[in-house]
Image (cartoon, rainbow, N blue to C red; front, side, top):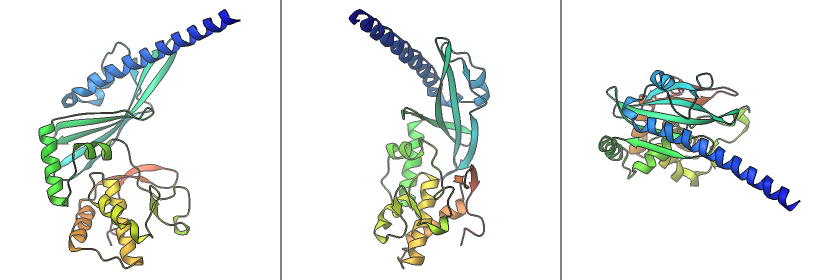
Length: 255
């Protein structure tokens, strides 16, 4: 029995080693592609030949949407799913990929491993630092590259209690409730974030407190709120059971 147990253990270890190796090799190959961020092109990626990646899954992944951030920076969001073999089976890895461009020139890329949570980013850091300095000057913040990557690494969804009647529920995001005036410090931070969904949560939370709890907003906060509404970046919005990209501030929501 002891010999059988040892054999089973060795076989399991060999399988795990093979699995980890195949996944590592596939990850290494796709990161090698992402590092050359200036050449990112979805059609070219689909046709590219890899050693361990068998295909880029076009059925489940692809381009999602593009939006304007500040200072003419564009963010294009993709879901990239790679299929790689494991013995006679196929496995896959899913990445949320954000490509950032200025004047049609790509300046960087963030990719986020949806299941393992790994983050990799590649940038022209001189241009990224210029963008961050401009952001900090306008929003009166002291944010850095790590904040930029952390806030834009994955798809954040704008919505409240999907599938429920929100009129019967208190508004909240990340378990921070809008009806508690002591949470205003969080909402002010959201207002000046890099992420447009997070900024919109900040706008709506501060507006809620102003209307319902008589929280006074400073001229600077009002200026930023107006800027976010006028810029009107596309958001990934939860519309019940469906998530879709759309501009949030139509005429009704601009009030």
